[in-house]
Image 1 (spheres, rainbow, N blue to C red):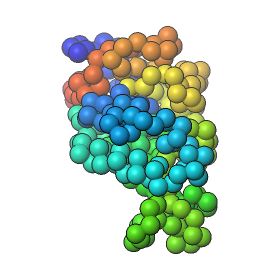
Image 2 (image 1 turned 90 degrees about the vertical axis):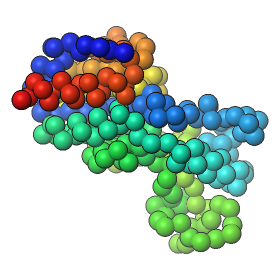
Image 3 (image 1 turned 135 degrees about the horizontal axis):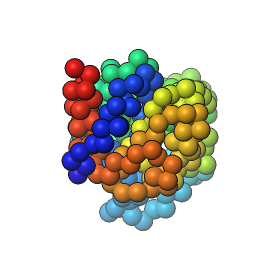
Length: 249
């Protein structure tokens, strides 16, 4: 655990007006949510990720892919936001401008109270038409698996980004606009290996932002970060909020 936070970090955050936080799987692992590959256990250990998370796999066996995501959705629903999620939601209120960019599809940030966020890889609790890519809400009542779009009759799929798919343009543009104008970027629980999100810290630094990394271990982001705080985000983030509030009193 990071028991003390460099006073320079708190000092810089006090001066920050525009803050961006970028989160990855490490934040949700602390809530007990397995990563995609860690969830491939039991029955699902027989399947390759390319079968379960690609448009080609869905076209070949939509029922199998649908059941995989319903299984994962069930895992997520058994979990709760952890102190790191709640600390980020609190930080949203502490800056004049703020954006949370998350790679996580579990919806835990929203459940913790975050509102100004971009779910860059989608949300496992949301659905869209496979053909038209329009959001379908609510799901139609149907015995068919998967159910079909009430508008065009195509299958409904999870609104998540599969391997080989492009990130949603609207979300990506909002994220990049925030990154180029922020004073501080905080990268939390990310491996620094998933692109284009892995480039966000370097982009923010290029435009003059102060970059803070919070992770269990060093990553490629550590090389460009102004400060790396190593430890659990569920411990470091609440501490960061506490010290920032104290400094502002």
